[in-house]
Length: 382
Image (tube, rainbow, N blue to C red; front, side, top):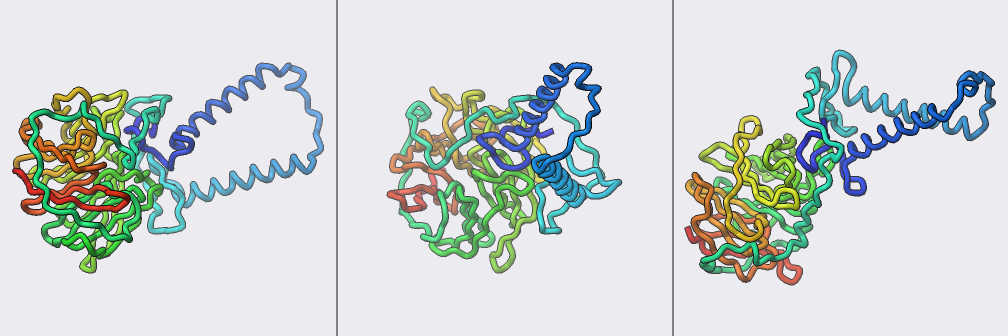
């Protein structure tokens, strides 16, 4: 069933650029071909030969190694899947010594919607740390944002900051980095209140983090470029704890990674925005229900540029969707109903702008200058 998922989604991490399940299919096919060749080149007399062969040390080593490997696989399958009538999961979890992560299910495996030997891994993954500018992705007739200040992030932050969000209820800021670290900061963005390292490989591959935002219930939603997500709860002492993870399923954006995500409070939806690539040269806005994380709607964003822009930040207000155009160094304001651009603002002093959030009448954008992690603050133009 993994072969029918969105690009980059699957069990385990990448091995030489492909997920583990891809190699599993390759080995299965290779075994079938090798066994077919062996049977094809063997003669009838060879098949009838019943001469007993005395095992040497090599044969014993190979045989016992095979038995041990099978025995360990049986233990893993039994502990993670469970005894009958449990039949396991359609998306099996990795082995864990933490019993709280063990899941036994009786639900039947879902059916494949489609099958592909390409295994959804032939599109180059985004590298947020090395994104470059492209003048062909700039919209014309743009005004310039009025800059207010630069604020250095704490030196203890590990990795490149790829996303940022503000929680008005707690008056705190959350940032995410490409090293899978999540940090809660005070409203001055100068003090770390708590930190959490997301396990990138357990159950769902949640690495290459592209977005982070606060949900209306106070939880933090972390999304990766693969459209996988993690939910984190936050207690009164600002301590974070993982409470769930999964994959978002799309249709139009099935062969695209995402570069940003956000909460639409009035619509009660989560939003993601795809990144253009050699297969899908457009960007797709996907909307998911907060209730069950299922796709509600999708639409291609009609941005009239020579090349589709690379969007790495998104924030939703009551009437607009604000996008951070990384490749064009612009802030694009979309009408929430039509999803068409209504205003454009240049950010000429940005290097590699990543995350974006709004605090009252200000726009905060994460960037790096001479290796320093900073947040650049601008006056909100809308």
